[in-house]
Image (cartoon, rainbow, N blue to C red; front, side, top):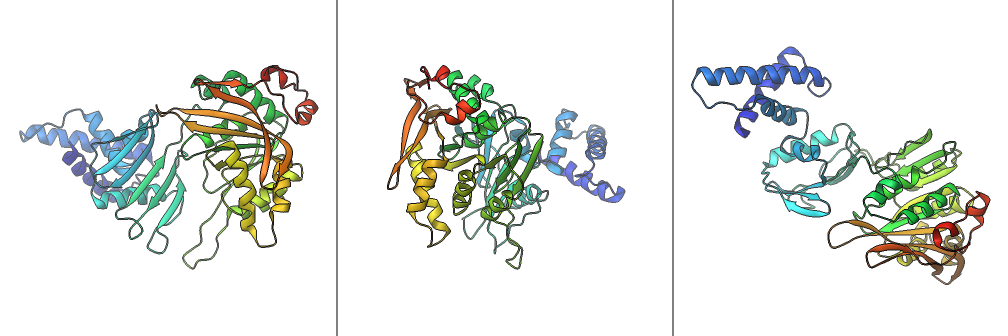
Length: 408
């Protein structure tokens, strides 16, 4: 079947060129041409006594995947259980299901890997060459693509983190046991009250998924501005401005950094500022925004809630020599209200490990916190501690004590 699909793909491509059909822009025409060529191929094989083609529907799907989809990888893109796909080499194609990696039987040629990457990058307009050996881009379905090429790597390294539908609300995450119903209600209150939330965790622990779910709680009348390296967030806000970074052009000019976008977002009258991930000097501009009264949310890579706050106190120092901890630490202590720490258990399941609230107090580089929820024997439970700074909740008409097990 693979040889037949390759032959059919060539025939369909040649016919499309003759008839002036754009296979990528006209899916209906592509499907029609593919079905007709598959039927002809099957009839010729039957008349000549050759090997039968088999299921024409399967063959047509294979041809369309080869021409307009992602070839041998398309079935994994279509599989809702597959959450990530990566290529370490032409014969080392992996997928992850429920956090568990598995080696697939797919074998590609070097040429096929390059063609797949070019096809994935085409809608984004981003480029990849020896002068720019790394690229981040969003696929049309919202999945995130990262590619690294030789000589930086031994072989083309491709990673696709699939966009997962249906996980855009806190109740959906409760259903997956990512967090408890009480913790979800507390976070819903925090968002509605305008609390500033920091989502922390290691790579692939579900930070962006949780950020999407938190953003779904934003009040309908709020103006939301999102800032990301590449588009990943999928927020259904009525009043939304979404921005992403831009890499430099061939001359090395025209780059738009995350820090520039955070600065520009403050001129857009945001009620809520959401930063996909802070990892550099843009953290300073985010802190300035939060300290000015704009409600915000963001993610950060860290091993614990405590480490997340320490890191947020350190990153702004990258903004320049005139920035010191004497300004940054008090600003973090005053600006960040809640930290949500995520992790992956030994079965590959993503879980909220703890939720802490800041008290506003600090000493040198340490931000004082109070644990609000903590995972005990596999279940996320309220610690019984009160919310240390309940003013935002009270002003919004909420009593977090209802879910925390005590009056705030």
